[in-house]
Length: 143
Image 1 (cartoon, rainbow, N blue to C red):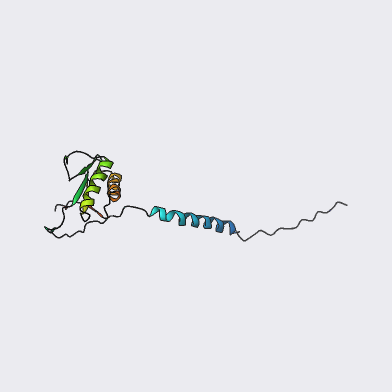
Image 2: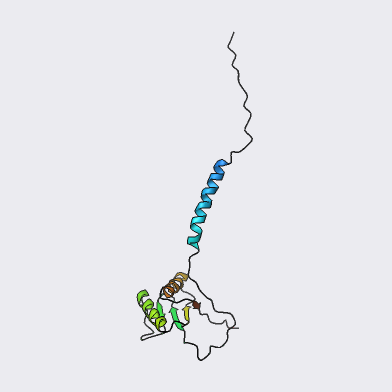
């Protein structure tokens, strides 16, 4: 007689093992918890209000940094206002003004065609020079 082989029928597994998925989710959670604070760093900016009051005569004259469409920086204080400044010169001049008059308002005026990164670099340089708040200047829309 032939030897009879016993085959046991295996029942298909109807449950999914979720332990590996939980492990992956915990790893992702840890990664997001570590990287989230790093992503929130930025330049603190106080944007001008839509409606504005006239500037009082006794207020300090603002310090305005202009970023042209080529990404070059100009400062409205000092000699040779039409000459482009390097990053180091801009920081040194702004730092000198803010050291003498720390309450001086600081504004960035950027050309509408300038790369956004150039405006962010200007704001970062101003923050490094000691400006506690930076405003963005715009022109009112013509009706």
